[in-house]
Image (tube, rainbow, N blue to C red; front, side, top):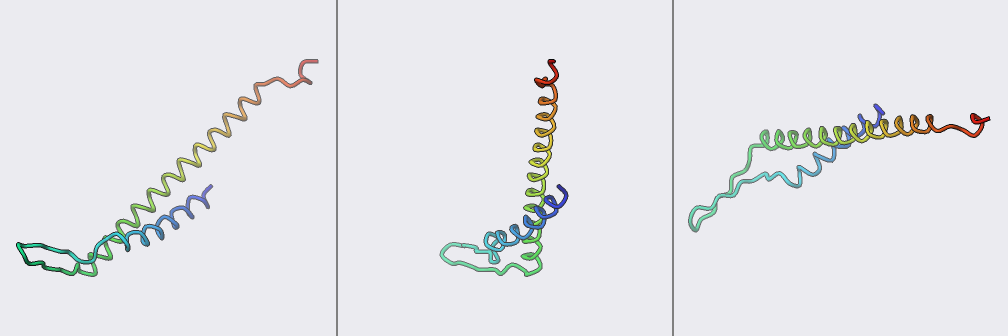
Length: 93
């Protein structure tokens, strides 16, 4: 279970970097009347915003996988308890 959690966090981080590079803008466009001004975002701010989104994606994927694994473990445990309560044919004799 721990391997799946670590892998999900790493894959979530890499996926978050890839998506945030596509989504986070590196330029700010400002319209004033009929003129348009373009401002480049500072590279440090751009990198920090990409890392922020990547960490959020990593934590989200980690949480979802952890809840899924925990639910799977609970269902497996409850099913084994339910089957233990069912009497076997050999017990009747």
